[in-house]
Length: 269
Image (cartoon, rainbow, N blue to C red; front, side):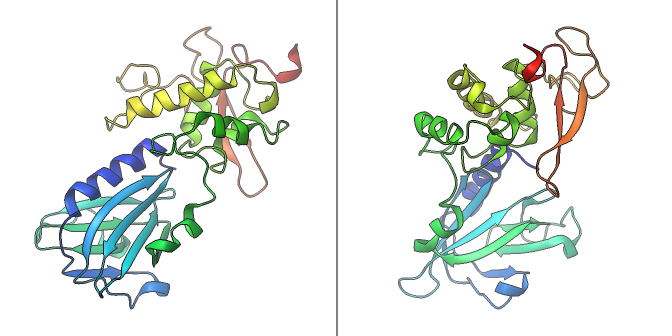
């Protein structure tokens, strides 16, 4: 699933490609909004909120303000084309098409598509914790939320978007490793939790400006991550094979990666 920095870049792409332009056509290819028509409305902006995208439109009717809410989930992506330019993905994967005189923005395989009046946005994203890349970032509030359930495994607490918004599976695994904490360590037992949260923000801030994500500082293939998707490879620090296991609630398990030597089990002393 895309991380917060990936969604931030998608928002920036849509913002610079559409903002200030009038929509000449809109096509929301989901049953709930199939008849919606934003043509004639002006795109005000697109912003990210954690892993959510909010495209705000003024009009088309007098006084109307609409927000197109999309979420990439596992396979979604936004692409921008010039009018008449061939799409690089199949048209049947398109869930949203927004057209202006200069731009065609296509949302492919989007996991969520909602259209609401802008003053109802909070109904969709109000549950989210502070956004690591947003203007509302509040470290103290993020820590308060993380510690509200001190027995929750660290990796689960980091992935819970109600605590802080923008961390996905990759960053959760990497943050546990660089902090020397086993993913199943109760979050209340992480004494350096403020430092971990600051590292999370630092990682996303660094990667939001580049398409190739790295937590090691090395952009070479197979050298970009400490543990994520490196199962059976040797730990870069100690040479122990990285392990992977499925963790999380039934039906929502995720692959979790760690080094058993650098990140010992919580009860190992």
